[in-house]
Image: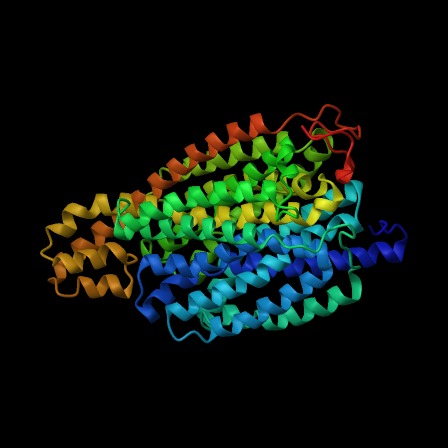
Length: 531
């Protein structure tokens, strides 16, 4: 392992390295968070359904989440800097087919391929921090990484809005090329290579296939279920396959000579607590961001730029509390700020449960600030615990599992929350839509389409003007009510997850001492057998 640098010029050098590492990670999170405000324009250009829009959004996170564990292992084996640079190149390369996509299918493929680059970047960028930093500097470095991650997610809609309105949504992909070139050069010049010299070169391909198929089956079922029906044989079979593949993956990892994921990680209770907290905050934030942006543009009539700007209060909350979360982590361990943060975020979600078509922007801003404050408290402790406090030889795999929980949490959030909102929306608007005189095919098209999209307007175009207005208003009211009810349910789910985190994550016995309740000392040096 590289020794921490301590002299003046070297300190500057490592912080420049951190800036480059975080820029690479920021490209991933920007790609994850910037497409939402462009989806209405994409829906109009390609005349596509809401489920297809979910795939445009989720293809990136699905591939990233499915491959991030394996590619975290690759970082341990072949060099973390090397894999980071390869990821930067692939993310830029695969942005080109996405930018040139002639239809929604090619856009989904381009986004999916970009996920391969993202899956290389995320674990490598996290695992490169412990070799360069230690102690409070390491906590600060993880805080910077998390601030960039949340900045990319929450500022993404505003940036996307400006680019979409000014240059067109395709420039959301073209912009990756110059960013990637600059980041690649700075990483090469400033970041030292690190790897696990003791790691076996064997790759657990069977485990990789099992976890990829399990993730795909689950997200496909959640995305298509609202359209075809939850009782559809294919959807039921996919849920059954998810369970079978997940159990199979666990047994494969137990028996593998060189497992994709060393299951010792899951004996560390604090690691499990951090994963649960991280999954929860990504699930809630990605899902609410997806729904709120669609609601702002299609129910409230805001432009892409305005919708992006209206999401910015969450960023304010995150940035205000990230330093506090780091200080509480240093003093008391990660459990306290993580539980506090999830409770605060749940409060903000509960406030959004009263959202309506006439809600003021100030009301929305307050709710988003509260949610951001909670996320800010959680961010640094979960990263520091999940990556900085595991045995150093497992850093890449630990970072891979951690980021899998981020990306799949985000993809699940979009799929689950959208499914819930669609169910509520369909139920609320059913009587008006069915009484309007539309054919069954038109009613099905209305239910599948995004409110006020070209597909939606096409389905109701045959109606008289006054009845058309009635149907549109009913759909908007139903969508608003559905989003609000979904936020309330998400608040409840987040509180349930908070209780799980509270009991999973042990207290730190000695806040200042090296011996941690999870069985690891500072920076993951083993002090005793994991509990």
